[in-house]
Image (cartoon, rainbow, N blue to C red; front, top):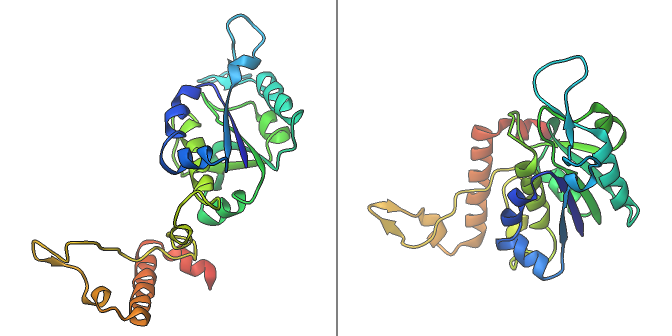
Length: 227
């Protein structure tokens, strides 16, 4: 898989995309992640990528021309399955979407900034808009890193224990059950007896019951979607 991230602040992403699972996946050749500096596609001496909005108003707007040139330069080299824009009003990132994106071959992620991007970028250049929540951040770099992380960890071989990824929260529209490790008793706070019983069928039954209870309490909409 190849993920190209277009950004005006590549330094924000450099460290976050070079650690833990993502770092190992890159070293194994499972994913190639490239940071493309949008300012490299500006044409004036100031490397401008933003301008005042037509009609007035507060804030600056990312210009269409540098973004168009950046995307076209990438598309000349390969075909992209999705061109994603990080946007507060995009579709919400969830596990099902991450699963689907992990099956693709080539992805561009455009990290938004300022007041937003020229609407024509959204109308004619991107193929998908993704939000990580109903709030506004200073820029799209952190959402781009989160989207990338959610995808890369699903690639076969990225996690040594692939079963671990398959049992994460939301993989089956349920929140994962609570987990425990040693010591069995810490300050009188004990691990549930069922987990120490060795009775695998009963343990799995308990875990499912816990998942259902936690989902009903914390994310009831997930159960309603399945009804």
